[in-house]
Image 1 (cartoon, rainbow, N blue to C red):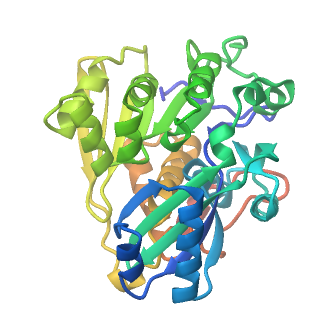
Image 2: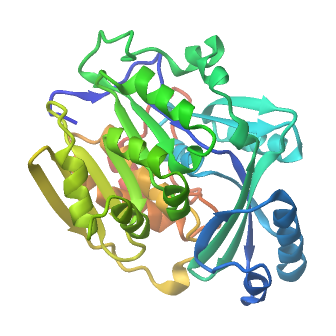
Length: 384
């Protein structure tokens, strides 16, 4: 973001529009690794599995470990929910659910959170589900995305959806050049929906001041949808991911290190008065972030404050909440540096991993009915 531009404050359009899978997270705390071994799962991994296997896994986990906890899930949806909890009202999530009990549960939770949504309902498909197996600070995420896999481009192009997204700074509406909007597409959204990803970029970001943001999300997405992810990463103004995912991406580009990968991607980025940003988290270790344009390249790091292991309850939403904190600071701070955004993202993630699911403590302030964003300094005092 340049000094003379700012994130849009237009009340007709969401400041941030996110696209992703909608899941009902079913979280279970494991007593040992027997279930992981039985289903050939890893304790710190994420994968998509068939619906019948997921149902068996859920039944065994509940029978063995007791009552689960239910939370809305999905990477971009988690980020939107945390943004909303931090006080950012003007954010909207787009996705798909089935017409079933899980869909009803998610719909009610989202209504209660006051998050603006643009949801397609698909009666012929079940709502996506994720079984989260928690082992201390490790988590095994096993999902079947159900209806989300069948989210339609025609729905995004519909007059109703277009009216909710708004037209400020789209390719056909560039009156307010100095105000920008953020369009966020999670990596998990790519399978079967790459045409939607391209449409979002071309309609709302290409040739406009708007920011196109993506998240690598998982190494298997990079490996199975390589060309599609390369396209997103190269078009994106801002790329999030963890170090493992960036290492996988570096291998795809045949770069020996993540630093070399960052140089490669930034060298190709030649937009005027804007930098490309890449942010690589690494659990409790340093966050590495890179920025620049063309031959201008900068690499920085931030050591995440140590959190006692016994204080960590569930790391399932750590990455998504980090993104929310980063974007919240980016959208609402007074000319924040990238270090400010990284530090704030880390603070938010540190609060979330002390809860089950991707949730903030209930003591944090939310937006008043008037819709005004809670001042950043007020939220920061609660995060301290």
